[in-house]
Amino acid sequence: MKIFTNEAIRKIDRETIAAEGISELDLMERAASAVAFEIISRWRASKRMVIFAGPGNNGGDALAVARMLYEQGYRPEVFLFNIRSSHLSECCEANRQRLLDMGDIDFTEIVDNFTPPELGADDVVIDGLFGSGLHSPLKGGYTSLVQYINNSDAFIVSIDMPSGLFCEWNEGSDRRNIIRADLTFTFGAKRLSFFFSENAEFIGQCVVLDIDLDSQAVASTPSDYYLIEKEDVREKLQDLDPFINKYDNGTLYLIAGSYGMMGAAILACRGALRIGTGLVKVHGPASANTIMQTSCPEALFEPDSSDICTTSINVKHRCSVIALGPGMGTSDETIDALDHFLKNYNKPCLLDADALNGIAARPMLLRSIPKGSVITPHTGEFDRLFCNKNITTDEERFKRAINASKTYNITIVLKGHYTMIVRPDGKVYINSSGNPGMATAGSGDVLTGVISGLIAQGFSPDDSVWMGVYIHGHSGDLAAAKVGERSVIASDIIDNLGPAVIDIKRL
Image (tube, rainbow, N blue to C red):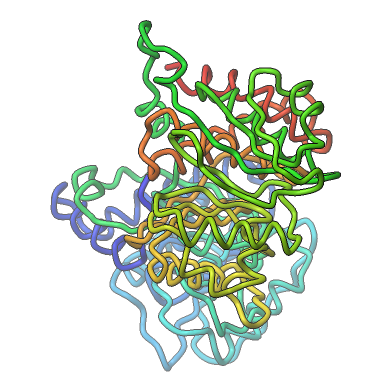
C-alpha cells in the first residue's frame, strides 16, 4: 500500500471529485459519515460530546459530524472558531449553515474572546481544529486551547490528524502545542509521521477509514513510501518446483559467533534453514564445532584457526550470499578480518550486529561496503555508524538513513516497531507486521538468517529484504498469539516461520 504525502492526498481528492462528478462538499460528507459511524459504534447518545471546529476543511468535517450525531439523537456541544484574522473555507461555511438549519443545537461561534467549557473524565472531545491542511505551527489562542484540551481528563478524538501535527515532518514543532489524541480517525492510509515513535503520544489508536477514493487516482499517483502488507508478500511466494535440489535453494555462507556468543550464530543459522535455504555453512571459532553440530545438525561448520573468534574470512567455496555479524564480536583480530574482507570482496552481502559495530570502530570502512549490500542495524548500531551527535527522534534518524543509503549505495533495514527499509533509489518500505514481544535478544539474528536465506533462494535482494522483514514480523505475531507478547523468545520466531509462510499463502 502506498503511503502518500499531504500534497499527493490533495491530488487524489481532486481527481476523485473529477472522476465521480461530485463536489468537494460531497467528499467531505463521505468522510464525516465514516467518522460519525465510528463514534456512534463506540458511545451511546447520552455521552457528552464537545466538538471543536477550526475555520478550514477540518472544521467542516467536524461540523458535518456534529450534524450527523445530532440526527442520531446525540446532543453535541459545538464550538466553531471563526476569529477575525481568518475566514471560513467554503465547505466549512456550508456545513456551518447546514448545522444551524438543524435548529435546536448547542452551537457557539467564537469570533473574539473565548471561555472554554469545563471538561471532565466522562466527556469526549472531538478535535476538528486543524487537520492535514495545516501549513505552519499553531500560534496565538489556539496554543492555549490545545494545552487546555490536553490537560483535561476528557477522551480526545482527532479527525484526520491531531491538530498541530504535520503529515510528514515535525522537526522544530513545539510539542506542547499538538493535540494528544486517544483516538485518531484518518482517511485512506496512515500518514508518514504516524510511523515515528515520537509522535505516538499524539495519535493514540489510529483507525484508517475508507472513503472510496478513486482507485485509478490512487494507482497513478507516485509515492516513495510503501506499507508492506500480507498480500504483497503472498504475490511473491510461489510453490516450490518439485524437481529442485538443495543447491537450487541456494547456499548461505554465514560468518557469525565467538566464544560465549554462539547463540546468535545458531539463531541466524536456524532462521535461514527454516525459511528454506538449501545449504548453510557457518564460519566461527574452532571451539564452537560441537555446539554448532549439536544445535544445527542440518548446517555445515567451518572452523576458524582461532578457538575464540573469527580471524580470517576467506570465501573458498561458491555461495549464493554471504552474511556477517551475529555474535561475531569486535576484537581487533575480528575487525582486521572484516576489514580485509570488505576491501577485497565486491559482491553484495548482508551485514548485521558486530559487523556493523566493527565498521563503526573504523568509519572509513563504510566506503568499502560492497555496493548493493544490505545492512540491518537497530537504532543504536545505526547511530554509531551514521550520527556524530545524539539523535532524539525517529524522523531525524529516518532522514539520515535516506541520505546514507544513497551515499553508500546500500539498503538499510532500520529495525524498530515499524521497521523501515530504505533503498538507494529513495524508496522506503515500512513493515506492518510484528509486535513489542519481538524486542528480545536474538530476534535480529533470526532476521539476518531469514533475509539472507531468501536471497540465497533466488529472490532479488530488494524483494528479499521487505519479504523477510514481513515474514519475520508475522512469525512473531503468531508466536505472541500462542505464548503472549511478554513471553516471546527468538526461538519462538524461528518455530513459527513455517506457519507464517503457510498463513501468508492462504487466500
